[in-house]
Length: 135
Image (tube, rainbow, N blue to C red; front, side, top):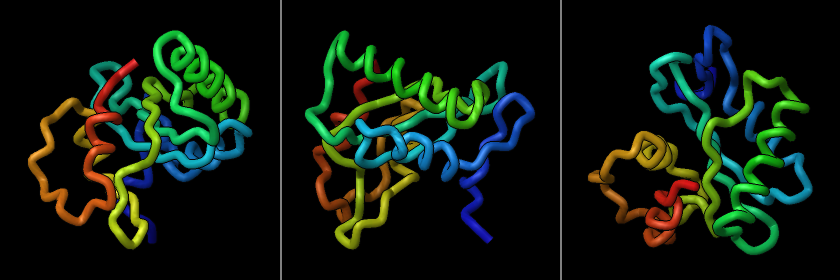
């Protein structure tokens, strides 16, 4: 049994977040990735990916170029239906001191909600502001 948030329902297709994360991490540019879903009026759920690159965090046009490359990579590896709608880059992911990714915070960021949950256990709370910046 996995987590309940391990499966996204995108346009009637059930996609595992781990499959999309694995496809992203298989790209030579990507060091780490986390995938969550957010509500979408047509598809049911949209795929949102939070990515840490092996190099520097891209900004502006370079970020859009890298995001497009990663979207095409996922479409090639899994299929067009698994292609992330939104890719956000950060220098790190929100993790506890023990190294667990706090996906509830990523879901809040993806939905555009203000983070009101407890973030005292985060290793680096400043990362949240960085991940909230959409392309």
